Image (cartoon, rainbow, N blue to C red; front, top):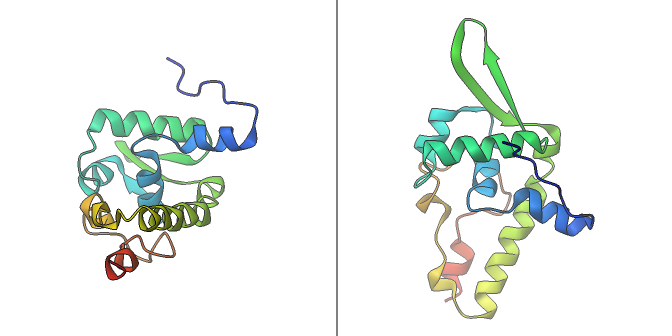
Length: 142
């Protein structure tokens, strides 16, 4: 089963094709704070099944955004982290976050926004997406 399908020729469509999907941006967001074991990712991201997590990680790995590290002393242990290419998504995700806030504000739908903690349990250290994602700005503008 090939995980990496043929990507569109237009750079914008290519970028969207690589990061589109329900969980990829969330996984990148969590991994931007440092490597995690798959069980840690599964526990930290609410609503994400092990099967879907592994599919998404394999897809991100095939696209060069995520690496998988194995340990000789623990053959069943895998750590996943972001490659430099994956880390280059941090400012882009921050801009998409800001645009999502702006879009909700323009359509007067800020009450439907969820804080990041609704999906990512316990948040992450260091604020992977520079502006949040906490939605405090949207909540304060109601």
